[in-house]
Structures are given as structure tokens and as C-alpha cells.
Image 1 (cartoon, rainbow, N blue to C red):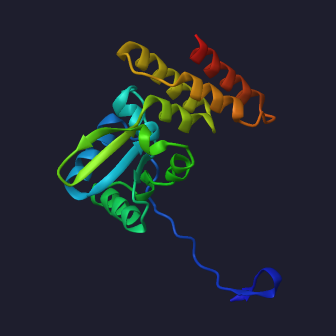
Image 2 (cartoon, rainbow, N blue to C red; image 1 turned 60 degrees about the vertical axis):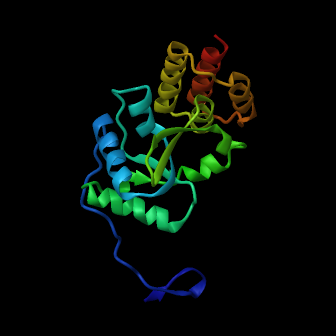
Length: 195
């Protein structure tokens, strides 16, 4: 023990980490995880992010983690997801349910889900094109912008509907910030939405 902030005693713990280096997960790895989920998980789940992009509209896309969210929002779901990753030989860091925070902050998100996979015990949803874009624009990294542009191209080819007014309004509500590169990415996305 040693004195911590304001004189409180604190115990120093060894940092816990895995020895497995992160690796890029491709479309086949994401599909294999979903196949395993069909056999081992139950309930309602939502797949978002790069993992979804790789199996939905961008087959050459890789990701470092699979954003799979249990819709009940329980710790049991999170633990089941980590167990699943471990069982299929992935580090637990390869599955991530933190995106649920951003999903649940989006007004009307529950009405913006479409079935991706369904079994007797399990339903895996994906966001609509509109929700996918809404989830990406807050951070809008270069990879996020690329995902958005690819989805817009895919939606045009496939005739998928997008609530462009809602996405534009959400872009307008974002704080301007000091990052010129981010402002340029937002302008690029807006131009594509307007085009």
C-alpha cells in the first residue's frame, strides 16, 4: 500500500493485459464470429462499425474489433460476448460492446434496426443506412468517412433509403471544433449527401 490522492491508501495492482497482439479481422473472421454467435448466444444483438461494413457493403474492409451490442444492456451479455471471443480463439479485446453508449444516445435508434441474422434463439440486427451514418459522424475519422462514402455508394446502387435530411441536420448540430481536417471530412460527407 501507498498513499494515493488526498492521503487515501491505495493498493498497487499489476496491470492486466493479454499477450495477444491485435490483428486485423477480415470479412471471413467476422462471419466466423457471427456463425459461432448463432450457436452460442441468445437474445437480441446489434452489429455496428467496421465489422458490419466488412460483411454488408465493403468486403475488403478489415477491423481490429467487432462491435456487437447486446440489446438488453446487461453485464451477462458482455461476459457472454467475451466468452464467445475466447472460445473462437480471439482475444477478448476483439469484441466490443462500448458502442452501445452511442447507439442509445441516438433518438429513435430502436426503430432504425434491420434483421441481419435470425435463428430460433438469436437475432442479430444491423442499423439502417441512416443510423449507420449517424453513428459515424460524431467522430468521423478518415476511416469513418471512407465507410460513410462507401455506404452511400452502395445505397445508391442497391436502392436503399437514407434520411439525408436527418444526417445533414445531425452534421449541422455538431460543434465546429478546431480540427481543420475534421471540418474538411464533414464538408466532404455533406457534399456527398447533397450530391
